[in-house]
Image (cartoon, rainbow over all chains, first blue to last red; front, top):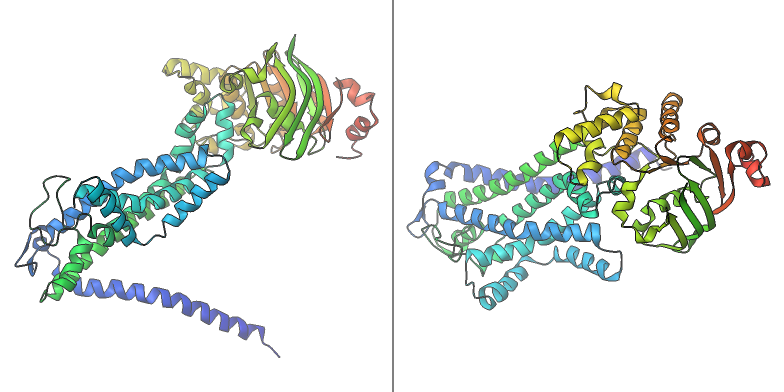
Length: 282
Length: 248
């Protein structure tokens, strides 16, 4: 006879196992990087130029480069993504063309990042003649995170109850006034969350900046948006595989800074979401 | 004076035939109650009068509605909705303060003068009998009010735009009897200044406040007459059955 209690226990065991299999590697990565990287972190490491062929000194230009790239990506992607999301959620009719557009945006999120890199090379570096520059890299990263921003913003807009829109319209407000004064303010937490998640992704990607901006070794800060720049993920790749005899401490220190940057951004997203959820009034 | 003149109105949502050959007149400064079982087209009819049905993609209509000689479809929807306000079935405050809820419609017309806004808010809240209860907490969230207070806030919000007609869509369906009585009192007093169309599931409410009552069934207007007549000697057997509670 089957024992339902035992069946349940077996099922629980496998569910727990599956969960642990996901959690353990993540935990291990974080622990190892903190353990090996934290000792390298000091003010000099964060604020100094790399020296002796990146075998000594700091990673300051890579940190600055990543911040420039992420900022540039967001300046480009947030307005366009938000406007597209407003169009898709508020104005577009439910027909075949618009369903295709929505489907392609979802699919764009799954395109491998190296493909974006190649696209950026062809379009911005070569065709628009921006060269390998912060501008090209930012635009490429911006395009890569557009689907994330559009999808999360659209969901945030659509989660604002339809009745609010009807009430606003019934009071004589125009459609744009309704969006501007009722829908957008209530969708901001979701939009911000999506934006910051997109930022985190942009900060960590190597492939899209590989062909479009990243400098192998540039021990100075960039002068303009048409200048090349170092960036943390690419720098990590270089010192781990391309330059021999780099101290393990420097490699793990760089990984630690990158990880901390991305986790910090995700943490901000979580805090924003939590704060607004507590304030949510419906 | 005739406020609305509706001639042979037919409405479809996709393949659903929602209203069938409805013709009627709505007088100024009357309370017209609309009763009928659910899915009889009452709300569809009501949402026709401020063109809220237009928002539905599958909406189609034939026939004509005139607001004081002017065809509804030739009036700009935003302008029409300023003239024809609506109070919804559930109290639906906007996620704003009490003050901002009432001021919303006026602000959207571009009025920024603080004195004008404050005066409009005060007058509207007085007209909906809410002023006494909220005058000291205008900056609090509207969601802190009780259901009945929220619904009177929604009435105030509608009044602030200074409409000529107010559409009530089952305004008391979510309220307790005491709150319902307060909303009904407000409606009876409002008819001096406004034309009121009240859709209600509550037959007794129609009997209490309506000057005239219309009975809808399956998208058809069965009968429209003085409220006394509908509730005592209706012309149609089905009206008689419905008001006596034989079906619902």
